Each structure stands twice: as C-alpha cells, then as structure tokens.
Image (cartoon, rainbow, N blue to C red; front, side, top):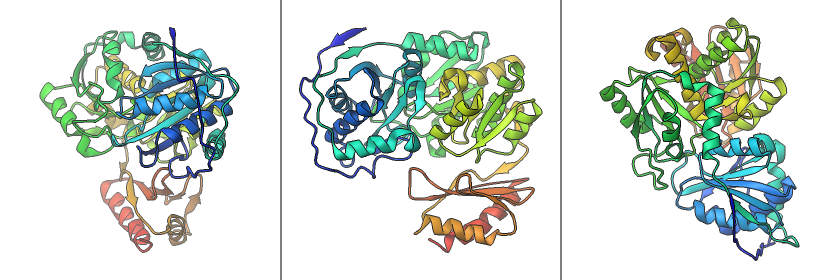
Length: 461
C-alpha cells in the first residue's frame, strides 16, 4: 500500500443539472461522453463523499476504455471534499464488496456491467458492502450532484492497494472450494473483469480451467459481455462440446453475475442454479432462510422448504435482495438474472462464488449437471420477454383487469397466480419496457399464457 500524488485543485461546476437519465434505481449508467462525462463524474464523486461522511472511501474500476478518465474525475470530486481514497485498481465488482467488508469502508466501482463498451457507470456501497440504491441514499447523492457542491477546506490523499490475494482467500473460505475435484470447466470471461482473478482462483482448486476471452479488454472485441443473450453464448457452447467440459461458465463485464451451461451444452436457468446452491447451503445450515426474487421458479421455494429452509420472496434488484437478506438473516439469495448473494460475502453477489459452489456440488455428487438439474426443474418457463409500450403503467393495469378473478399481488409489478401456472409483468428499473415472465407445467401451457398476456399488452403498444 502506498500513497500517490493526485489532483490538487477541485473546481466543481455549481450550475444545476438534471441527472435523471443516468442515475437509476440501483446505480449510475450512461453513454460516455454523451450522457456521462468527467464533469458529471466529479459532481457525483463530491456528492458521494458528502453523503457517506467518512474519512476514506474505496474506489475500483473495470477495464473499459473510459474507466481511467471517469476514475480520475470521480476521485477529483471525492478528494475535493477532503475525503481520502483507497484506490484498489482494475477489479471485478465483487472485489469492491470484499474490500468494503474487510476494511469497513464505503466504496464505489466504475463499471457499466454488461452494457456495451461505450457505456460506463458507478455502483456504490456503504461499509460492509451495504447497498446504496434509490431508497438508501442514491436519491440524496443525485440531489447533491445535481445542485453541485463547493470543494472542502482540504484535499484528500489517494492510497493505492492490491487486495486480490485476500479476495481469493475469502472466496475460497466461503465456498470451501479446496475439496473441488478434477472437473473440466470452460470459462468465457467476455474480455471483462473475471479474467483478472480467475487464474488465481483456479490455481487453488482441483478443477481445470479451459479459458476463453479471459484477457480484460474494454473494447469487448469478441462479443458483448452480456451472458443473458443467447448469441453471446455461442462460442462457450462450442467450447463445452469440443472440450467435453463438465461445466460452462460465462461472466458479465464486471463478473458479479454468472451464467452456466451443463455438460450437454444446455443453458441453466438462474432459478435452477439458485435452487441447487440453496440446497447445498441448507445441507450444512439447516433451518436457514433463503431469499429469492419473485421471478424465480416455484421450484426454488419448494426446494428450500423440502430441505428444511425458510423461503423469503422479494422484489427484483440487488439493493432489495441485500436488504431483505440483512433483515431475515438469510444465508443465500438468488435471482433469475444470474445474481447470487452470499451472507458470508457481506450479503453481496459474486458470480465466481456461485461457480465454485456449483463445482463443489458436482464434485461431491459425482453426478453430471445434465442429470442433476432435472431434480430442480419440474416446470417450464418462458424466460424474460420485453415489450415496448406507450404507457408502462397503463399496460400493466390492462393485464390486471383481464385477470381480475385470479389471485394477484403487487410486490413488484403485477403477479397473477392461476393455480398450476403464474406470470409476472413489471416495468424495468433500467429500461422503458414492460417485462413478462411465465411459468406453467409444460411448454404448451407456457406458450398459451404468453400469447394471452402478450395480446393484452400489444393493445397498449
């Protein structure tokens, strides 16, 4: 750890601005420099420093071309408020959460996650990796950033640290990964931040990594680092087949999310992964709570309850999941979108930890994933279907009116339970679209319900 010189002067433009287009429910996200530039980063840095009201904050960043520029501007705003910065370099997002937990400091990572290369953004947390979202401080940060803050009376100091070794020790301890056997794992890093730490992780376990696009490259030259889009899994699918891998793993740009492919090169839904990991935790922690968002398959709470756990249903989104985990004391949480949260990781999400637990399960069971998964997939699912509509709220109410005779709840958008099948429609927190998810006993029933709901939404397009 060593101190470095930084900018000695901080001038913050105090002309009011509107940042509603880039400050969303969970984080900051926008195109650089059209929506998100150095001046805005400096404003937000100053506002973050003022909001957390502490002597020091952690700053890390991903490999995007714009990240060093945004980093320098952000630190200019933070240090201009007299707050010191612990700079931990180019990292996956879950390394920031580890740093925030082990150092008990607030932090920010510069990343746009799975968005294309021209985007960048910011994710914030309080000490202990506690989330900062719309309801837990992001509105206050936005208000101060929009108004602009004058510099403080002193300039903060920047100290550089490398926490990678401690992070690897941490993920190994949480997942007890040393006992993983000789499995073959095809890994697509998407030229994102997973490649910065995965070689050190695989050096500690018995499994063999078959690497693909591990070199961090902010231009994302091979495919976008968004594993939820099937076209971005083509190369990994071929690698699993040709190498006869036991598991395929694709990470998003900042590696807090992972998507899995079985030994037959078939994608694994996030609900299936959640159920498998939940059962693994409940085997050694009976009676524990497991959090799942309301888009997850009913197989998740059914698995949890059958294993003697307590299933806790919540809204979609990491800030909500983390808060519910804190309130309930849950040991694990999962989302359909590939985010997996661990109590002993400061309730933060980690794609790498999810991979290690899956490898533990496969290693211990001796059963291929293509067979193991069938125990957790009794239903058919539509996957997320997006609709662009004129009025998101009106479209949702039209659907509610059409299903007025069935059980409905409004925890997040509209969920309608029809007995042996259910669906949810909800507005996106990051895009102007309405999202539909359907689950039913079989594919034909899913298709019928999708068609029924789609025809109602279509009238609002």
